[in-house]
Image (spheres, rainbow, N blue to C red):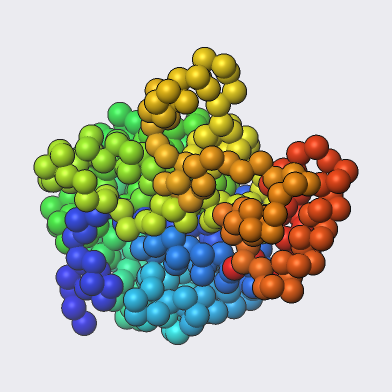
Length: 412
Ligand code: KIV
Ligand code: ZN
């Protein structure tokens, strides 16, 4: 078995920022966002089209449904040229074994194991001492390593943990074979400069850190998850754990679309932190940004979690200009009030307004942008219903279109 970082996946120390999508695991932990196995598969296929590097497909020990979903995603989406498929496991043998079993069909399986690191979690949740946890970490990483090459380790609540204790835990995890070290701000407590300093401290004080990729994971309790991650990138983080539309526990996780577009629009600012010339135009992630809007709509439809209109990147108003001054400016020169093109996330430039005079082609185009691919028969039926609704309403919204398409077809 090779010991080089992520040898199995062939990514080594990446020259791009890796995108680890946890919509199907942490995202699904949003209250009310439960997905069935088919819905998870549909989302996983779209995440692969989007180009994420890793899909955290679920927590196999948590329920038979999660086990089945991870296993099916591993079989259908986890091909050699597809993403790494990851399963979450607490640092216990039963969890790790369940993850290993569920991941068997994947060409590139990863086990992500975690244990609490903060004193408050140790005392009240785990009821274990620091010394006991330091014994468990290498034991469970080695156990995971007996099933797969690619093992990720997370010290939960790292954001509120003693850095010296963290360094010790991470060193032991890497020595036992962990190839990704993930630093979670589990309760969204840190500020950007604190998170950056934490990553810097880890780079400087964990002696074997070069043998692992540094990853970050964060929640949005104070609305700082994305800013925290960007500061982490500047200090050496090379994997970002995030969810579509930022869904997840409580206030959610760092939003994938925001991170990806920040790294895309401001690539020249971030280039030097990755050792690239500032003027380089080479992409910083593997994401096909033109798939972002479609993915956002799909996740919103299937989870039932609405996207707020003013949400960055994928909100209904993200590319809309309301005031006369702004409209006038944009008509004279787009860049007066736009820092990115609508097409870059998969929208058409000029949003076609659909109404009773619109034709089939415009109707089909808009549905495609929303993530729906209809057969000819489905399109005919949907178009008749659209005309019917258009006769009764002045303006047809995306919600109307999605309701019609959901009735007539299956999402792609
Ligand atoms: O927020 C968290 O700490 C997690 C871990 C399991 C990585 O989701
Ligand atoms: Zn989390």
